[in-house]
Image 1 (cartoon, rainbow, N blue to C red):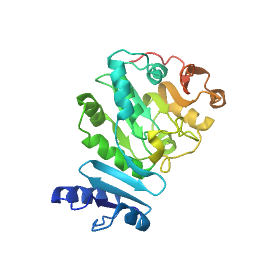
Image 2 (cartoon, helix red, strand yellow):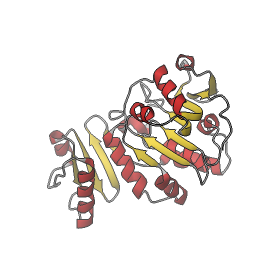
Image 3 (cartoon, rainbow, N blue to C red):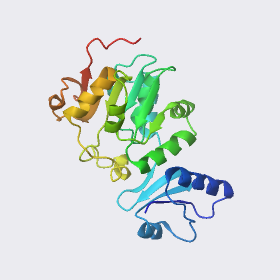
Image 4 (spheres, helix red, strand yellow):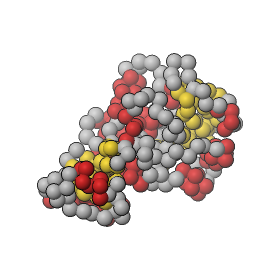
Length: 263
C-alpha cells in the first residue's frame, strides 16, 4: 500500500503538510521513525515522502521521482533569447489567449512551455492519469521557487488527475483551441533520460484513431501529437508533420477546418 511520510525528524509544519497530503490523497500517513529508504521500500513498494526539498515519490523500479522544470527552463530561456525554434510551439501554432489541453502532463515541462506560448491571457489544463505522478507534480507546481517566470507559469496550470479519454468524453465540442499528446515512448529517446523515474508510474497505452477523433471533437483549432520520427502518423489520421530532420522526435498535426484564427 502506498503511504505518505516525511524526512527524518520533521518539524511540526512539515508533519502537518504531510498529513494534509495524506488526507487529500487518501494515502495513509506513517511516522517515518528510524526507517531508512530501503526499509520503507521493503514495506511499501511506493511511497510519497515530504521533505524541505519538496514532495518525492519512491518506487522499487523507478527510484525517486521529483518535480523540477529543468527542460522547460532550458526551452524558455532559448525562446526568450530567440535562439532557434521550439518545434512543439511551431506545431501548436498558438495565439495569445488560447486554451490548451495537455492530455499527458507528466512533469509538465511541455505544459509550461505551451502556457508561455499563449501569453498572459492563455489558459492550460494538464491531465495526469497516475495519482502518484499527479501528487508529486501538483505539489511541485504549487511550491516551486526559483525563476519568477517559471513560478508564475506553474501557478497558472490547472492540473487534473484524470484519464484523458474520460475527460474528453465529458467536455463539450470546441472546449480548447489546441489539444496535445506526448505519449510515453516504448524506450527513452536518450539512455540517460531524466524521465526514468517516471516511466514505471506512467500510462503506456498507445493512442488510437478513436482517441484522436475525441480530441478533434473537443479542439477548435488543432490536435498535436509528439512521437518518434519513424512513427507513421497517418495511422492516426495526421498528415502534417513538424520536425524530424535534426531531432529524434516529430509532431503530427490535425488541423480543424477553419480553425486557424483566434477569437
